[in-house]
Length: 216
Image (cartoon, rainbow, N blue to C red; front, side):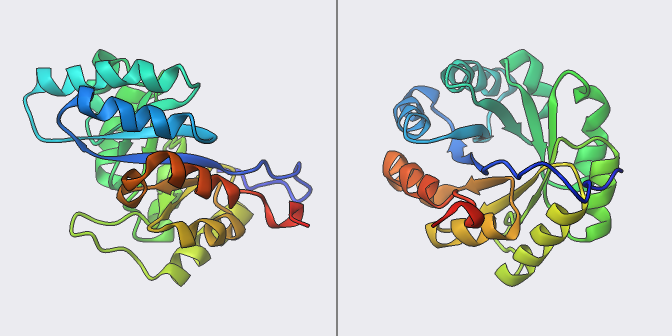
């Protein structure tokens, strides 16, 4: 995979990537989702779906996708690549390298394919070489555990300096947004904590997206 040119163009300002709680009722979630989308510069929304039958899951995606897309944000489905086309989503996020490699050929080139759960530098490089549209660092595992924050910053900095594929940094709180931006994240993922006050928290997070070199 090609490295970033040494004299690259100025780095674009990072954007927000929203991660929903598990959704069972699309109608009940539409209002907080709309509030979040109108409060800041959201690039993508990752829909996490509560367990259910396939038809019900597809309907949740179908109901929420147009709401996201009308704000010019991408709709990604968490861990269900088979639902992407039928639900009208733009792509899928896969939670580890094995799942990503199993899904990539069905998603590309028409759909977005992102990969998280990357335990090593090697795994991240493999995902990018296989065509990942982005890699995610700092996302919690199935038990809610994540790497030490210093390690997340180090991984983002290494990636941003060397590789062209965008990287997403997972912010476990508002206080982590600015450090992730400084470390080199192209996108900052906001998870469950954000939905307590979606409009306010998105607006607060956006204030920390300004690149350090642009802050006076």
